[in-house]
Amino acid sequence: MRACTRITVVGVGNEFRRDDGVGWAVVARLRERAAQRQWPPDIVLATCDGDPARLIALWEGADLAVVVDAAHAHPGTPGRVHRLALQDARLSAPTSTSSHGLGLGEAVELARVLGLLPHELVVYAVEGADSDFGTGLSPAVAAAVDPLVEAVENDLARHPHPAFGSRP
Image (cartoon, rainbow, N blue to C red; front, top):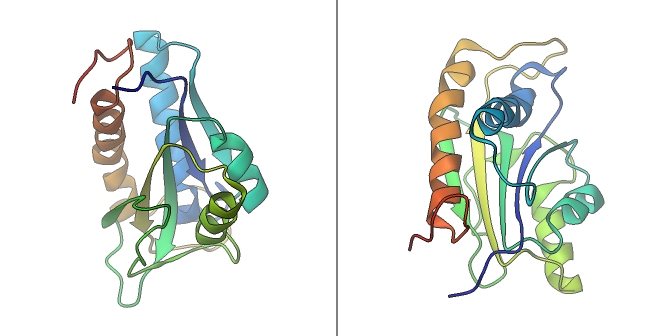
């Protein structure tokens, strides 16, 4: 079993574009929980605007990277969460798209070509209802935050790390 050197959780989006801020909201909640549990410093909780170069810099060298992003789906169900896992250095094509022009798909492909992918990559894409200017999540997306925080923590717990125990 490979020992973990670093875990990174990245909330992607823009907290001033309503539901596009879901990734930031999840990271904020994880930070609150981490402070209560005193997670080790090699678990990085970060936010990003979705720029591929910044995403790659955040997950470079990580054994596990978990990315949370808003998505647009047509037809969509606001608050529905899609979990995608990296397989063979490629993400399977989602049924929804990122709320950013260039973003996660391009970051994954570029990182693959450059040999900068994390050992394991998990992406949570949350279908949004409102990406207009403003703050605050729509009710359906806000309701998805706590279950999503639990899902991310479960991913962390399944990864071998002294803070969570060594679980398969």
